Image 1 (cartoon, helix red, strand yellow):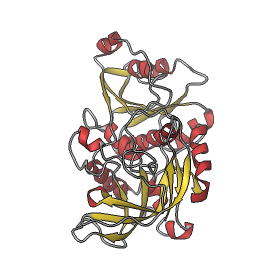
Image 2 (tube, one colour; image 1 turned 120 degrees about the vertical axis):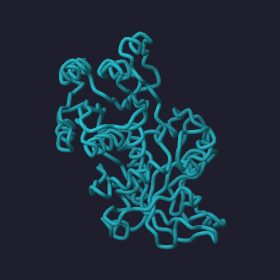
Image 3 (tube, rainbow, N blue to C red; image 1 turned 120 degrees about the horizontal axis):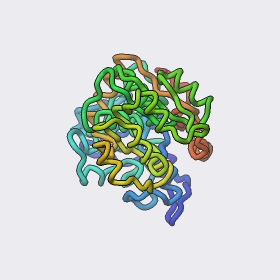
Length: 345
């Protein structure tokens, strides 16, 4: 099989390798990869800016989907021919996060999806609904589950609540779509009027262009009659965290899920105290969250927003598209033949 592995060093590049298919253990599932998708952390890994533990010369990408090609003799959760995706942390099945779950992290500590085949423990497997294509399913494991988890992190999202999302990347758009499923009102910030229109098309009630209105937190307060939103999904980190707290109501919740603008932010403790804000870092989430999210999507026929799809050999263009920041939705790499991979779309 063809596989791309990162090189060693402070910054990394990707190199193509021809390797034998991995041996299938008793509880392993071998998947022929049809599609894989990119997340911000995948570029951060190559740039040497990601602080998590990494294996040497690993295969990138935590997100993908494909067809089961072989199973171990003790496998009960999948059979040959099944259409599947997988949880990013194969051993995190349910419950709160623990250190040991993160020791097995696809595309980081264990080989990811930028290959023609991937070998996974059956615990990771999540089945794809019939209406969803491989390309769409490949966009879900990190950004989709992160959004689902973050919306319900400190308390369950309730109908009628107000949610603030940031930008037009995968996490933001999934959070918008899922919040609307719950009957919540969604406000958003973004960098251009064109992106604002797309967010409104997807169901955002109001969108603030932070390029033309840098004090966007004041506008969010105005749009909520001075109260603030119930929940904020903070994606940028450094440049947004102070305003995220300011735009959230007293006793509201801020789920920190990303670091697109950096690792600082300088959030004063007094800002937290004055608003009785509840802040929490949000990990991706267990397979149980993925299963619940997938069931909700299937019930309502929700389709992920796909920005652009690149051929396997043009993976570098996919990375460039992600790094440009111009994408709206998920950037996906088509690993197998397009007609085959889209047959269920």
